[in-house]
Image 1 (cartoon, rainbow, N blue to C red):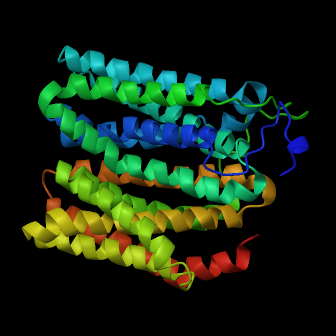
Image 2 (cartoon, rainbow, N blue to C red; image 1 turned 30 degrees about the horizontal axis):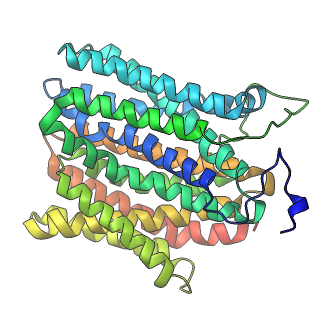
Length: 391
């Protein structure tokens, strides 16, 4: 690239994995870890409450992630994008501080817990929409953006295993207080990483609506949304069961296996094979957990779940991108994020609502949901996608 093409206000990156991209990808990892650390910890702290109270505390987060999305486009154009992100993360930190205060004083006020969770969900949703649909895209060249979206999303998926691993490793030594402080520290690291990146100024559009679907939701991607939503419901149900550090470590190994398979196994395979294989692996994992046999349940099953959801999530993200028009790339990112997170939240709600009385029912439910998702993709979603994709 000729040196004259570089300007002071518009940095041009020949390679994708430059310093700014690394910072944003790592910010995605740390922010995701801060949220996912609460999956094993919050139910443990609320152990004395009713199962429905715990279920609401876990599930209401999924409602929150939708609350600020309609304002995302207005906010990132009316204010500096990075400043909106930083403000959102500091709201998350404030919500974590409220939970920390209650944990430190052994004072459980459910209404305050629920409010903190829904506000945290709103702030997290806005922060992630800005990070994935705007900041990552703005720091990469046009020909690198699909790879950038694909790579950055993987850091968030690893947070689903690394967050609980960190929480379960800290808890025996520092208790609930230590895990919550660690979650706040992860959020603060995400803020620092984003502040280290320079974003050039962009003038807002002339006609700027305060509420719109831009950077929030892709209406004609609803079929993909529903299919991914069903898949992550099953994952949420499984994560609502009491899981060990070993479970999440093997789940992370499954994520790594999915990355390897994407590169070497599915590189030239039939397009539908990746999602079909991923859903099949998840179904096998559900049967292994249901069997109760120690080795399959504690080692093989979580690895297969990680590999399965890794394959499915990565491919669905690419489908969302290719379904969108050129100016809708950011909106496709947010739609994918909403499907992923809302499915997890609903799965956690269902799981904790029935955990005490009917654990076998939960495993059967997760398996049935995966089979429905597989049938939907095999007989409808894939052919629908091929007919409607734009790229």
